[in-house]
Figure 1 (tube, rainbow, N blue to C red):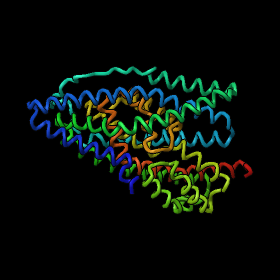
Figure 2 (figure 1 turned 180 degrees about the vertical axis):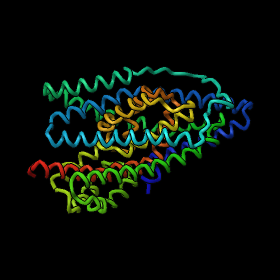
Figure 3 (figure 1 turned 135 degrees about the vertical axis):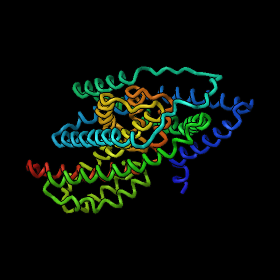
Figure 4 (figure 1 turned 90 degrees about the vertical axis):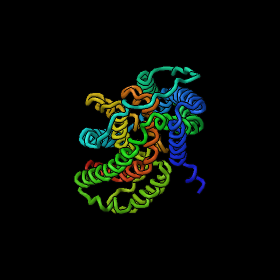
Length: 397
């Protein structure tokens, strides 16, 4: 019960509620000295917390991507290559599907840009500039080159160092980023409520979450249909056993935490090879995040429309989707892992500011459980494709 009460979505929701309440109260008496002083503190705190989060983004990119490349290189095999291709194809397929849905549906949601007719926030009384050690794209290129270099040279010491660095970054995320997020979110929503934005835009997010959940089920149905066609086996013999894994993923919001249940569910299927289950399900739990990718793409398009008055251009979204598929492979299967790993893309490619980033983190976390459930259930479809591939190519167990 304690884990549920103090879970990340609950803390973020609490931060949203507290921020909106304080912002509405301050906005009701904007000329009062107490309100002005309070908002000065809020704006300053938001700026400082945003700087800390932005500083950690390149570290997160390096910590997630580089060790993943070295690990895959050391264990390279034909089946691993097929599994990576499947995971990447599913992720970017879900991203492009979500992009198409965004261009088709978001203009019909009657979203009004929050740029006009709003109360201005006061200036920050104190600012702390914390420049990142490198840009996001530099961190991505550095991670890829270092990962490939370690693989080519077989440098075990550097591979161990990168693995240790990944553990350090995960601790930074869990002990620094995650704890400050509720306060950052509270400050952001306090500012939005003070400006007058949140009262007209909050219902839009509820509609978007429902649309995304429908998208999850459509994508899962497509994955299982394609898996059945390719393998020549009945996909219902797989998906009908995945109910416990889906429910567990909703509760844990973590593919890694759901792994034991997912393995047990997959092994009940009569059409999946046991060796493919033992190989595919644990691997896909870490590299296949189609539901999270689908969610993030639709949400960034919605936030961009709300805050900046326009959806990103098609070229920008294509670049974002292609890179997001790579980041999803390197992201950890933990709550919020996808959006954490891709913060650099959100700020570097889509050029989101602190407010946009905060909104993304909030709405993503509030529905992350269903995105994780889509990831886990989709792993069964990809494992069925692996089984079909192994049978077609006469690969022994």
